[in-house]
Amino acid sequence: MAESESDAAFVEFERVQKSYDGETLVVKDLNLKMPRGEFLTMLGPSGSGKTTCLMMLAGFETATHGEIKLGGKPINNIPPHKRGIGMVFQNYALFPHMTIEENLSFPLEVRNIGKSDREAKIKRALDMVEMGTFGARRPAQLSGGQQQRVALARALVFEPELVLMDEPLGALDKQLREKMQFEITHLAHQLGITVVYVTHDQTEALTMSDRVAVFDDGRIQQIAPPDQLYEEPENSFVAQFIGENNTLEGVIKEIRENGLALVQLDDGELIDCTPVNVSQPGERTRVSIRPERVEYNKARLQKGVHTLKAEVLEFIYMGDIFRTRLRVAGNDEFIVKTRNAPDQERLQPGQQIEIGWLPQDCRALDA
Ligand SMILES: Nc1ncnc2c1ncn2[C@@H]1O[C@H](COP(=O)(O)OP(=O)(O)OP(=O)(O)O)[C@@H](O)[C@H]1O
Ligand SMILES: [Mg+2]
Picture (tube, rainbow, N blue to C red):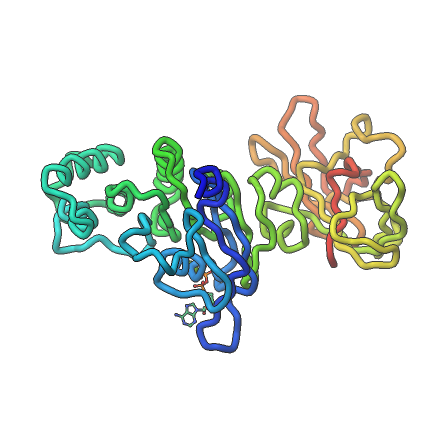
């Protein structure tokens, strides 16, 4: 097989389904192609099938239907030790009775790597995660973050082409978590490793990944680079799940030739939106707009587009930004975020204002 072919789809899920009990499908129809070197994150609520997908890729579970390929070859035909997959799991503890060096030596011994080679590889892997001086200690003598770094080194020590990580930072505090996020992405790109990473922390997914696959109900709801996922959600689930989001409900009145839709909100007001997964006048829709894309400064509102009346309910000063809660079209939880700039008006509760946005920032999604 040509190298370029395997690179375009180094990891491939083709119509994969999985049932544990022979009745319910926990993975319903998974299609995914990952190029070599990609950092892909599976993000989704609990029970959406993320770990199951990793387990199938690692070979600990088999797919009920469909096929998983690695480097263009069906994974069933590759014996586990030849898959070249490293793994880091949240609860995949280090072997407690072994030293750090012995922990790292283990995956090398399993692969029949000679002693002097092993020593060199262990040193390089520990240095990489800045744990070079800890080789003789046992896991219990390390902090949580240090143990996690060793777990990472152990997953990388045999130079795998693919690394699977399932909530590897779940047990760490916020500061250490952020430091490790940076270290993991940095290492992965530096070594050119392909990574499948699982988390239910959306900030982690957005900051670390080349692409994010949003899971729900055993399916990928959307797979896209972080900015596209955030700015162009393809359905209501993704819009709600990723980042903060305002929703207004209504009915499609008209889809115009310029590609924009006119939506009548349930309180009768009209707004202009980009139709996303709606197609017909009369269809119910949930309109989605990000808090930082809402404008209330009259001078900055675009001429000719519909605006909405709003009442200020709460103003929260957050230092770098202002967070203002409004009542808009019957929704009391409508949030506007504005940058704290010298000319930025600080709204007062009780104030009646007019708000607007660019039609391309306002997405008409499924209701
Ligand atoms: N070994 C198993 N036997 C039977 N059902 C299972 C097994 N493992 C997982 N499941 C079920 O499959 C579904 C998907 O589970 P999975 O562990 O893949 O979810 P997840 O997305 O990783 O969730 P979490 O974020 O909570 O880790 C769940 O409904 C779960 O109860
Ligand atoms: Mg899981």
